[in-house]
Amino acid sequence: MPIDQREWPKPTNQHQGFVKFDNQVSSGHAVSGRYRIDRNLQIANGISGLNTHDRGSDSLTRDQDGVLSDTLVLSNRLLNEFRFQASQRYNNSDTSLYSPVGTPDIRRPSGNFGKANNQPQWRKERRYQFVDNFSITRSNHDVKFGADISMIRGFSFFPRTNDGQFMFSTDKPFDPADLSTYPIQYTPVLRPGRAQSRRRQRTGQQRSPSSDRRQFQLGAARWLSDRRPRISAIGSAMERDHRR
Image (cartoon, rainbow, N blue to C red; front, side):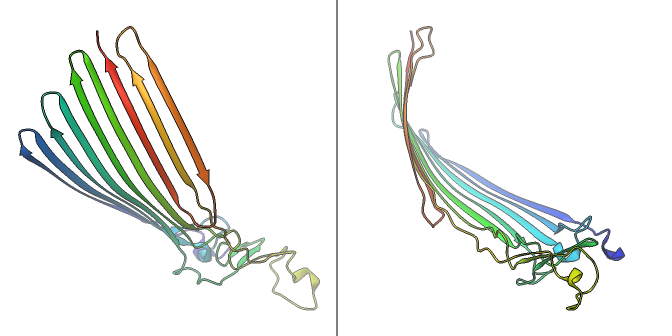
């Protein structure tokens, strides 16, 4: 491995931002919201040991989410709570500053050269969630109905062997007349596959905090797969408390 690449700086920087608001519309109506972003960047990942500068990559992770809540007191016995959330996670591993796309993975006894065979790669996931709970209080009974609907979509690119891989048993330069300089193994380009998942789930629950404790729960789920990466989830719940 080249002497000037045995040690390499690996700076990391992280930035966070947050904003929130609350508004008391009336004595029985409140609205609140918030937004958050978290950004993390790591420079020169993968350069160490036998991995030369060619193997480097810059890794970016960015998380974002926003929430809007609405609480409405309809009467001294009726309460409705609604919440909406949208979030996104993005991961990206970029090799453009170290090895351009199309550079093969070359492995020799003295070091690993060229771009890593599983680079570059990225993933993005988006989620939308709707939650609504309606509470009724009568005498010594509390009844709560709820619905929770989530839609999740994920997209990703993860190569198994991108741009090919050559493995050599010697550091000697290639010589057509010397068979020992030929690669002992070559792995061709294997294009990444894609997958899709969907999930639907419904649940019901009844419980009591008293000594006479009862709980009932029912659920069902279904998964589908095809070539497009999409995930969705739908759920609902009902809760009842009986106090003595």
